[in-house]
Length: 152
Ligand SMILES: [Zn+2]
Image (cartoon, rainbow, N blue to C red; front, side, top):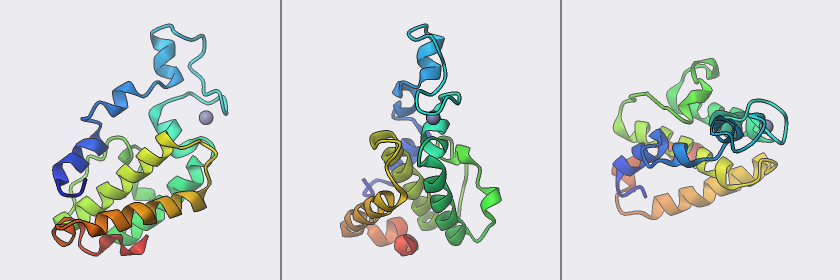
């Protein structure tokens, strides 16, 4: 995955269509497949961002993720809006840092969509460290993300 920085960018921007195929209740309601646009777990409006950053363990996982990103960027957590997870219209320098932040965001989105909403922060941390290990095995790791993922 990290061999091609472009595919990471695409993944996180939803160019792969991922965002469009995720069947949130809001979307299913719009096309009249279900009666309510609300989340079946908590009753809030069910959007992609709700699934990723708010529902179940999402809020604490997003907080944890945001804190790591603030360490990389040296900015306040308040400057990292939740829509970075689905539309990260950010340009960071150097490129390694940019890719590292996109990598973290993409892993979080992937994890939240794939795993149960009740999956805990600790399992998420373990998942991130496993996938980082894989990322660090790739040939172009230094040019791709440098050491920015060490903070995970
Ligand atoms: Zn919910």
